[in-house]
Length: 195
Image (cartoon, rainbow, N blue to C red):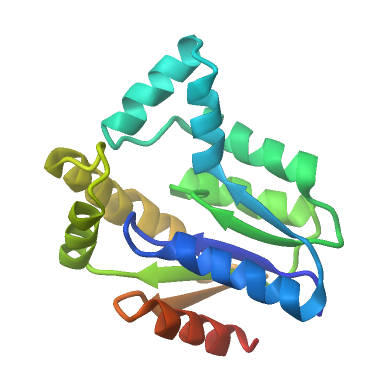
């Protein structure tokens, strides 16, 4: 199997993190190639632990459910690619891009890193189901206000970032019904990716 690139999208609570893990494990079992996971969430959590001025600002934004500014998100994401990606590894992303400007940047990154036939996987879950799932997971930062903010940002800013790729060469947008069981979602992903 040639190296693959998968860009995952889905609102918080969509189960995309679980699907990313399942896909990475499946790919590794199939061809033994390493998967680079480029997730901005881990980068932000690591930054917050440094306890400097920038980390305090990032922590405030995350706690309010707001997006971190483009320059910082793009820097964290780019650093992961520069430090980890080569032509022999699969790439799975999570948390980037989050808006149209970042989608444009991602397009140039994929060209630079010679990534072809990029699959954009959108795990679709409706607002009501996302709200229910986020309330059930009972994380300390999942207050009703933060949940509403995250949902609104996703549908107002992230969905246009997904749509950006719909007519772009080298990209294929694949919608997945995220309101199924975990195993059925993964089966749909494998089927639509022809794995």
